Length: 106
Length: 166
Image (cartoon, rainbow over all chains, first blue to last red):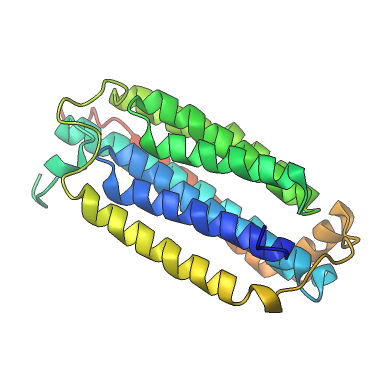
């Protein structure tokens, strides 16, 4: 394998996961699948934080770890509000197809 | 890098790909759970035990269940007739490929400068707890407030408004 550094290997995995999530968020029709893509991107960022914390110069300072923990908490809040919004939009428009939600007026 | 890392990374990426590509939405949610579990294993492999178990608890325990509930409440499991991908899927794919090309190029270009295997950090959950109530107590309080507001907000947003209909 060309990548000898474990940090680079983790960063590549995170980049690939981020690209997969971005592709999902940009190409799927269903609003819930778009949220799933966003969750994948957030998780890829968390993997970056943890990898940099582990191989950084001062892991005992816990900076990257704390950032990842707070990021997980914010992502959980985002998921709850986002899915609540999707449910409300479904009640209103009877669909979760994003291509049909092309107007601001209800 | 060890064989175990490649195995877990392949599992995670396969889960992520399946979550994005599968037609049935419930299968997508299950594949997402596999991706979350793989990420938790990656965290454990990086000596971040607390983050790994928090990942399992929060993502597999809460977020994946929330996604399944949302899918069942909106009847998204019935596959759409016009296909599952949007009209502008090609542009989205090109953008994602471009982003990955830039990120991968940046990592590979700087790979020789990145650190190699270092000693495992001696960090216990006690240290994390001390840091949370010591140096990071203000962010902790803000996150607590945010989670409370998000919970109330999600309930209010998803609440069925029967009073207005009457």
